[in-house]
Length: 160
Image 1 (cartoon, one colour):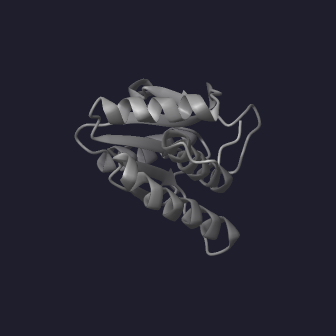
Image 2 (cartoon, helix red, strand yellow; image 1 turned 180 degrees about the horizontal axis):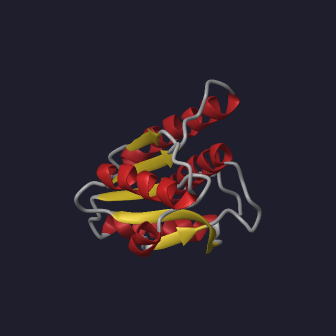
Image 3 (tube, one colour; image 1 turned 90 degrees about the vertical axis):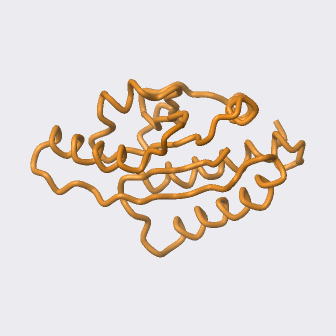
């Protein structure tokens, strides 16, 4: 299974980009041994439309253009479900074991994801009830993906 992260907005050079890249590289190292075929990150420029509805629609079209043919969609959504790391790892492992070709994680823009993308999501997750900057959400997601791989591998990184 290949993992794909699609993000609205770009990470500038700096600590957030360095940390995101560190977790992506760590996942690549352990993920191959677990049957994961890589982790792609796609950045999409934020829409410059004047109204929120148009911005959401433009961003949804750009996200949809990057979706592979067969995938499980996970939406990062502040109104999503808060799940623990072990449950997250179990879900990734289940999709991998079922032969899911791609698991796609989507981080929407400041106005959120389109209702259509939210409906397509098999899982909607939130990192708590606080509102987080999109850059931090990306870093936290990549850390959780890496943590999930360590849990599946029985690696001591996760100590819960």
